[in-house]
Length: 489
Ligand code: ADP
Image 1 (tube, rainbow, N blue to C red):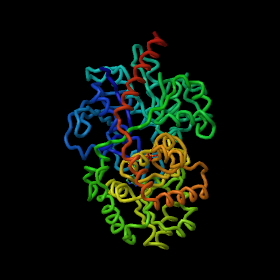
Image 2 (tube, rainbow, N blue to C red):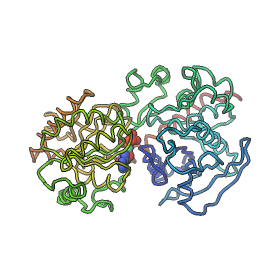
Image 3 (cartoon, rainbow, N blue to C red):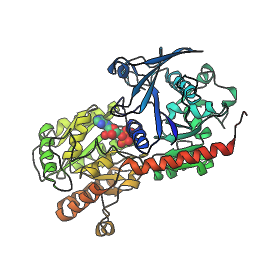
Image 4 (cartoon, helix red, strand yellow):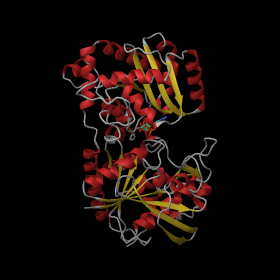
């Protein structure tokens, strides 16, 4: 049994803004099922704390003021969660990272540096919990300083740093480096400096014993210029320590046979429920109720990364095709406004719900025929896996985790019974359009269509396999740590 401290800035169902929360809410459960002792540390966001009622807590005085750590459990499990609170850091309502105007909170560097410092204290068993992890598993830039700060500790745990999305790097002006009082030796291009800025991600990339990303393909892609976001050189240098492990999905929450958020359950044994869900979805969205027409869905952030601009560019031609579009998402205002405009032009063909709506996301997966993910880059992606499970055939660009999890409906894949979606390559509206036309052709050929649906529905996207790979990775990190010895010892 290994003792693992899992540090994250969000975890489903406590708080979620994206895929990181899904991983943080699922991987610890899968590790727990494998007999590991895993505990989570994360911020005590105000809305979260007030929703949890009275919790036991510990107060510890630190140089920067009192830190209070509330203790709870990941809902429905016995996994301990430590919620880190500090006056002025997380005790405000709203999004964890963004203020009401959609811009980053101005003190994000201080807020997440605090999370890192307190996590180091927990990791070194200085918080009075009587528990010292062998591994600290850090996730994304908000936790990036932890491997760096732990370097100075004698007898520190091993560190694993997971990149969920390299495009978010935690970059801050140089003044912040001074303000945070970080050791001077960290101000170097070989350390936390990135072109005269403080870079949280580099704390993980430079100092973690092991680095991984959320798909094998993305682990390769980020070593090149196109996807490396300026970190490709460093990642190539550390490639012996870099690997990719595909995310699993929460197979209980996303199970079409027992999903409480959809009106009609269905599965490999019977697909009638899916047809009924399609009618419900069309009604709910004021689309013409028609079981023949293909419903193509999109759920996610309306940002360039997700290729929403490609979809918008393709819309005039898409409206000449026999299809309906159902879009749920929020993100950049300019894309939201353009989508609203198209929705008003074709109210019975384009359905749009702006905002975050978990139950609706389930109904969309359950009631649609096809799912669009034309991402420019995609570290792992979850919706293409949910889609396959729900018999909703994904149309994806061949990048990152999408390439690892969807098999194209090419003639040979179809013949071998491997095809589970439609995969295209170029990031252009034209390539997307061609892919959609190919998908619509497949949709018409019912026996083949059903085979593709069934192939997707049968796939194993559970966390079990991936959790075992994380365990192996933790083992390697501990070995590396032992091999390295103590810098300060
Ligand atoms: P991201 O890059 O945003 O993390 P992922 O595909 O990895 O993308 O994960 C996104 C997760 O958030 C999925 O579970 C998806 O269903 C969910 N999601 C995104 N936007 C919305 C929304 N507007 N409403 C409901 N769920 C959403």
